Length: 472
Image (tube, rainbow, N blue to C red; front, side, top):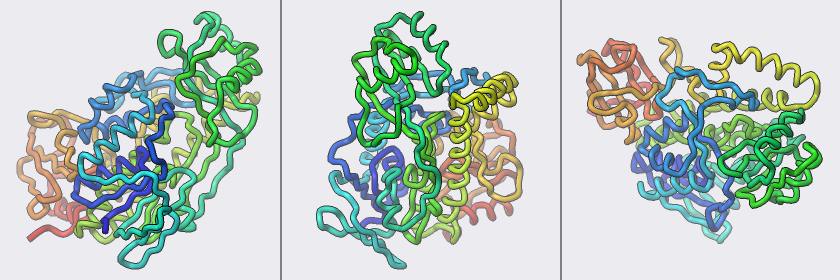
């Protein structure tokens, strides 16, 4: 028997498996596909996800297989530069093929001891007060203490639970890919500038390679990837030329369906990633949202399994992450409207483009898209409580280096605070000159601030709230 079974070995499922293994939780990942996807769609890791990769010691491995670009021009593809002083040590985006990030995260999880079984689908789920029984397509049945559905927008787990998935179906579809272009850069730039249809662009990626986005003729089966001829046909219809596109690196289609699960948890079964929320990829937030779900859920579910979780800890997963997903769905709805070729949305787009020349507006939208503006509602307290903390120098290393094991951390500038009976769950570092604006900061394993202050009694209350009762 396993402690946790995860359905789906995409970025969310693989990241969750690794987070659970940091706490010695017995994890099995079930993946319906027999082989990892070879489909090489480029995905972007935004600032907050890059921070999480750094926090778990994965950033350099990702960076080796990624292209770096500035953290700007995300909102509705309005080309504005990022502010120069974003509150992060990683003010950039990393573009990498999705199979690469999945492979890296799966290797990370299996190196920590997670088991992955491929070619196995879930056909039924039954649970009682103590266990979940999962029926598999090969006729076997496995039992686990908890089950997490990370199996995408068409989630079998969500459907078996009967969890509603309200929202809007796809009304429009877009073709996206990377390919070589025979036309000269000057001709490409001139043609693109003359086209008012949105979303539409050809962006140079180096050499003759371009990122190509063009509206599709209608809504098709997303399970069937488009062909190069589909791109040529639509480019000629929209721009009057196919730009001589050839030798595609990858081709895909996406729609504007937007849905949010009514619940993220039913008893001992939970949902994460696209199984809990889907939205258009405008702004490139989908993979990031799922990975951040996994890091929020992992330590809480591990605490439940290990027996030290406070009573309501696991419920904070939905309480914290569902509002974040609601905000992402809303901003993608807004961005989709701004891509409409109709006069009204185009007028609003022009107005917003003017407003984004004001630093405060541009900063607000960049922080929203990149995930660094997220603040969980943890109750009354200083503004820092509930926010993530940027990486700073601490002692001989950095703050994120101290979070690699997935434990909490007390950053103490006073030398008078202590963690007592929580030392098996929380680290403690004393650094009087740490570059933080507080005497003491208690960080959760996901890097969000749980407490700020200098009073030991208040600290003990926060430790109890997030890390359970102290060990005698």
